[in-house]
Length: 126
Image 1 (cartoon, rainbow, N blue to C red):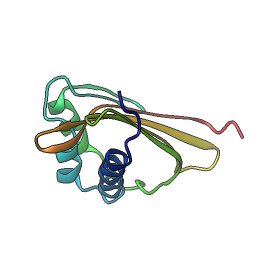
Image 2 (image 1 turned 180 degrees about the vertical axis):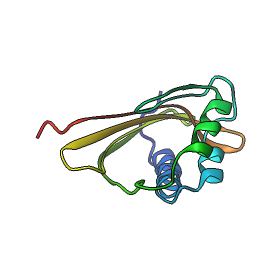
Image 3 (image 1 turned 30 degrees about the vertical axis):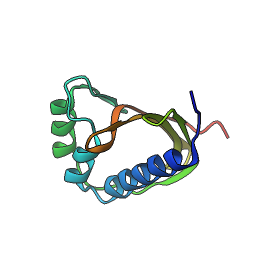
Image 4 (image 1 turned 45 degrees about the horizontal axis):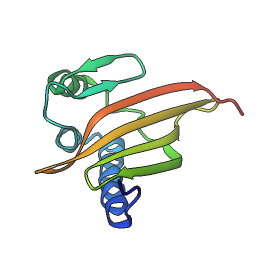
């Protein structure tokens, strides 16, 4: 298996950056489009466990659009072959807290989609 093919890393990074722009601007339609449209899609959030695209879409539609701005650091994108990838990043919104985000991306006929995501926030160990 080829790990981190430069062209595949660039494709996933572009999808990841598209997701980030949609997230901080609360572009719900774009966020929905970037998740795999399937009952097997999972998103573990800071206070919710969402199974299936319907639950993820309902969460996004109901979420307040305030306070979504954040800064990223330590972003790592690792690709496995031409069709799978993991994007991991840290984010900051609140002093003294650090968020962690991991997304499993897969290539579909419609483009790169998030098939699984995990978001959590902890006290900043620094």
